[in-house]
Image (cartoon, rainbow, N blue to C red; front, top):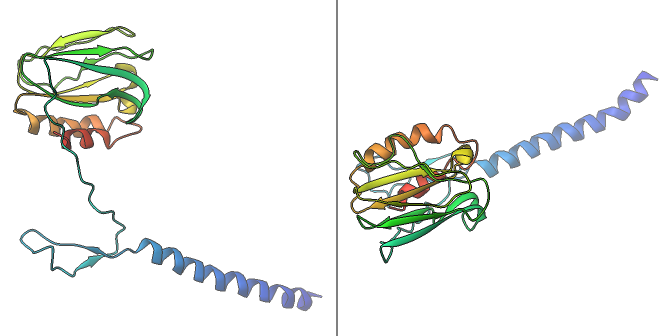
Length: 195
């Protein structure tokens, strides 16, 4: 009786083991995508070195242009073209002395500066929940702001006023902020790269 069961199970075990290895190889081959790797000083166009790391072609980042006029509207939204829990537009370039009107289009949002992520000497703001707020930006530099209840979902925005004089400090501080996000962690890098 044991021999009969063994003989019946033997082909099944062989089939499972054989197909398992085949499957493992297929998965491994999908994950091992040849990628060009070039070190500093090498000509990346002619390098033939590859790495077994999956990679995507570098995305072309569209830079934000200077917004026209001296007054600008930023909507606070649950959902928009940029995803869930966003400011729209999320990235703005404006002139020194321009006014930004934050509009509470959807409920449960506000706009507030983030400590260490605005130019030195710039005025902070902290809007009330569900209320519009207008701020005039008189100090050049990069401002990163948030919606207080949704910052963990990366509901942030970036405004460049004149020259980005504090961009290095903002980029350094952004890494700490990014570590607090539970989703959309790439947003801060994406937004700053648009400046």
